[in-house]
Image (tube, rainbow, N blue to C red; front, top):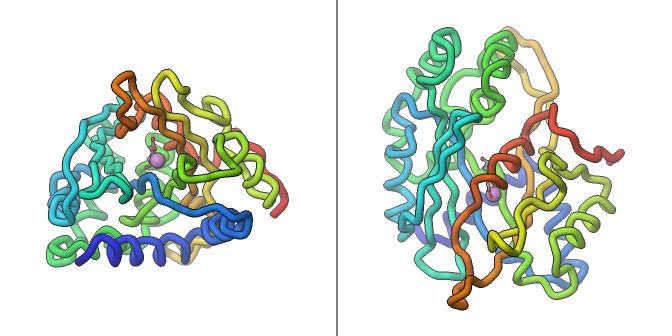
Length: 274
Ligand code: OOG
Ligand code: NI
């Protein structure tokens, strides 16, 4: 599979679940900008056949290389950043939940989900947009996970897919700052993740980022209960050059910690009428 077809499939899956993404993308195209992806991100459990170590070979087979690890103690997550084979291709951020750090009740729910996975589905790169590889949990199970980890609850119903694409602001001409981009996105009636501030990071840490609040959709839980849940979001990143003149390639853990909250309905943000 080529990198272009990989990202085309990821994008189709992501926009089907995240209507705001196509709207934002098209609005910047209409404004005369060129869209280049800075990175995409995936979430997984460190349990069953879908651990970070199980998924990573698909990225390596596409030509990605490991950059560096990141740790999020409060959110019980660990992650890795990956560099693309060609510098104009998207980086990848892959995180996993440290399930051992949850209660035994929550761990039992997660074990019940990952036990349903057909290992054959993990053997191909399609697993990275396979979505849920298990039956829908009950709303009660979802809420039990939510009480301990918003990430776990989100993953239990959304599954494996790109949880966000990220537009490279470095490739924009008119909208050349995170705040200008966020103002444009707000003008479309979309909400911004304000956790940790609208703009996360700074030129000093060589990366500035901002993101939307995730779209919402109706989800049918086991037993037929239908509830509105957050799906996926869009991010915008501006990178800076280091003292040696090299464009920064990594992620910034303190900023990423807040970007994760884009899928949390408890996150403070400006919600506008769409
Ligand atoms: C990933 C959040 C971190 C970044 O750019 O710092 C991130 C996620 O929500 O799964 O993407
Ligand atoms: Ni990101």
